[in-house]
Image (cartoon, rainbow, N blue to C red; front, top):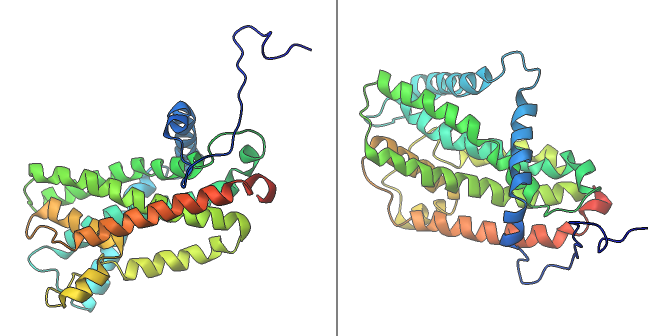
Length: 281
């Protein structure tokens, strides 16, 4: 039988245990960039395959959510959104929130959903939740068009400061990826994690200022603790980038710190659990 050394153009690949505290090889991830692209594109196509309304769901979801939220919180509960019309107030927050929530849901179920791939071939397993998060970018881009159209209807001027939404969108994706690494690894071992996830996502929504503004009269200590929820910094940053006003204060660093800590611990936990995926999934 021919060996890899005798075959023209063949290579011998030696797999070794990952080194280091995190065990992430960025060069290896770069070598698998095409796999990341194809898995991302596959997730997008599967999502809309044989869907009656197709991509229209991406348009209807933020619009219906904004209408229902406006009726319940603005009309019925008289939530004060300041000088900003409440539909714009809630749409500007739902944009990053849906990016986060959709990415979290997809990444958390990604390993179990790709069980056949995991058990047949080697590749860095972190690629699977990463591709699931990246596949939500298309939905975000379409929702952004809806928000810009709403801003035009309400005659809100467009400024160069709106470009700041890009780093805050990346921050939302990092939060989703970080939490997704935890939940996806746990979901391989305990399938009821997938049942618990909607409750966690719903609770996370209520402790994030999506439907209500942050009270400027709250104590500095409370604001700092509250900002340990990384999505607080993301939502505040989006509203500031789109509509101006008071820029994010020092509490934004608390959100950044929470993202960093969640990402580092998520990568560590994922890599430690990775060796069991093929046997358990």
